[in-house]
Amino acid sequence: MTHQQRTSAIRREITQSYKDLKAKYPILKHQNAIGFAIFAFAVVLSLLLGYLWYIGIVSAWVLIPANAFLFGLLHELEHDLIHYMYFKSNKAVHNFMLGWIWILRPLTLNPWFRRTLHFHHHRFSGTLHDVEERGVTNGEKWSLKRLIFTPDLVLGNLFRVVGLFSDIKKEVTNGNLKFEVANKLKLYGVFGLIPLTIIAHILLYIYSADAVVNFINGIFNTDFVLPSWIDAVLQWSNPIIYIVLLPNLLRQFSLHFITSNLHYFGDVEKGNVMEQTQILNVWWTYPFQIFCFFFGWTHAIHHFVVNETFYVRHIARKKAHEVMKAHGVRFNDLGTFRRANRYHETTK
Image (tube, rainbow, N blue to C red):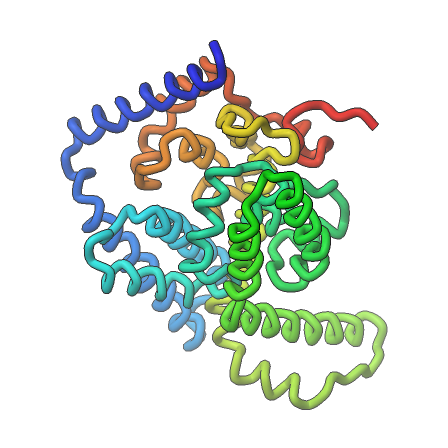
């Protein structure tokens, strides 16, 4: 079978499994109501946990992982919203949900800008101009640098922007990308960070610098002191850092680690969905999966059947996995870490 035939067979069988599931459980057809209920649950509970931490009832050790899990739910909702899964005909509610999700996940790209990058990702997954995945370290050799910048969209992308833009220019020159599309990708990738994402990262940089100085002073009995304005910033931003930013740092590291290693890069055949992703559900990834709502289990399914909600995808994942495995989709190809996410073995 050709890759097109295998892809069609996978799509057909997975789509039928979704239809069968909804026929058995008709409540699943009410996706607007379900989506908004999940949204309200995650938002209200995360803010409630934040309040309980603020008044001293819940510890930071409970707050941070709990909110990281809830924000992982919100990421899945945002992804569905980007594909217009909820309230497509009600722009007010649709944009209200997107806005709140971005406020509670401010380390991420503006979702309205991200929509353009994400649709481009689906059309050109694994290429040199797949800006969305390259922005989260996909395709880079594993190193301490990649590990440190896995969750970072600001400094991390500053280090890779020259190479990325150079590759985009080459793709335009080679006729693989239209000039207008290339400009749009670059503009959206930069302006999507302004202002919320950059501000959120700066607050975390300040918090990290303060933590490092305090650690050094405690270990080596030194008396390094940061400028007084650092303390002033940390005093008013402390609730934001603990309730929103630190949980998102944990969530974002987990998501970017999983997604950047389940997507293939660089040698993916154009239009070949079979080579774009793998299922990544090996046992040792579970701690990361918890904070990105088991993204590695189901995202490859999404590449075959795009227009379905994340919760249906999760419920029906076992059947989807059977179908995908039978047709040759890879599962737990850990060689991707050695190959810098290339699909094929590389020779030096």
